[in-house]
Length: 60
Image 1 (spheres, rainbow, N blue to C red):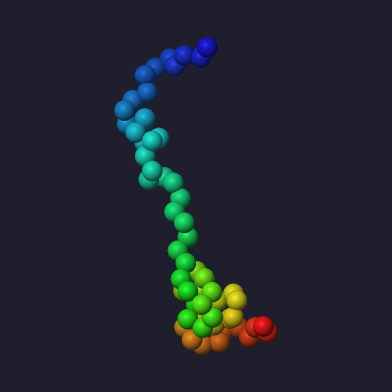
Image 2 (cartoon, helix red, strand yellow; image 1 turned 45 degrees about the horizontal axis):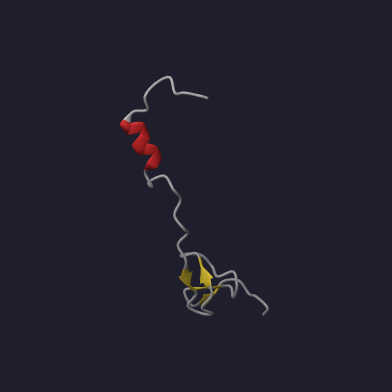
């Protein structure tokens, strides 16, 4: 059976156990035009609107 050669320090052990390094879920906001979930400060991929102005013409 494998046995560690050295004791794992408290700092190294606690760094591994901490939740700081885990990824967060991406932020999402509702489109003001169609209500679809989109990334904030981006053009809505569903309807092509951004801040109530049509940026990309989409055929629905």
